[in-house]
Length: 280
Image 1 (cartoon, rainbow, N blue to C red):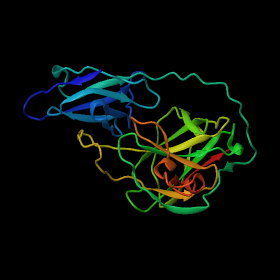
Image 2: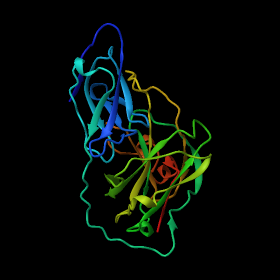
Image 3: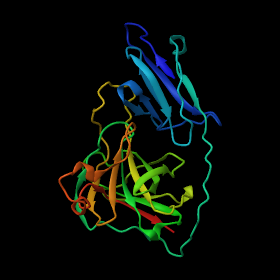
Image 4: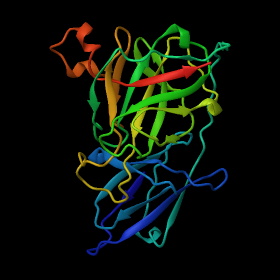
């Protein structure tokens, strides 16, 4: 557990860098959470963030894809110069999986009609994804993910791709075992190569999601602060394609839950992020 008491009347910024215990390489874009305030931020590309001595913090939780969650107790005397925190790599147990290789790549369907834009929902760890349950995707290796980026916002800002298995029509376990950070090159459909990771779509399909990144180095107590990021397109995909959202502290919610006055059929026409997946 990482506890930071009041360190004095004059604010000072204390730099912290996250490294891998295995080889001392930096751990970029990790999540730093302040549990009592249900808020936080991501570290930068060098795995660094800073804390202010005027902040009254309690439990701080640090985690990154591919590493075990870290909780520390930091004393005043520890905060001299830059402090290094080592994260322990996580060992994944791979479940037995049927694998099918197709001769030709297959890409999930395009949306029927574009319906609007999806603004960043706010909060560290915020994700929005599309449920892909086309049987033609099952058991095949993921080659690339496609995201439709609007011209509103900063389309060059980095974001993280996350992929989950599906159980009973909802996202379940995360498939991605590495932190996959990408940058959109232009407005419209952007394709990102994922073939190097050797991920396979399990039976039942998967959910492909965008996670927005928040690089505020110094914690701000206002959890609803706005910052520049991508804007995803929304579309009508028809029956079977459903969008979901979550934040760091929340569970996955079907986007149609925000439209209770619509029938299920009409819900499919709204709030579905424009995401596609290519397998082989």
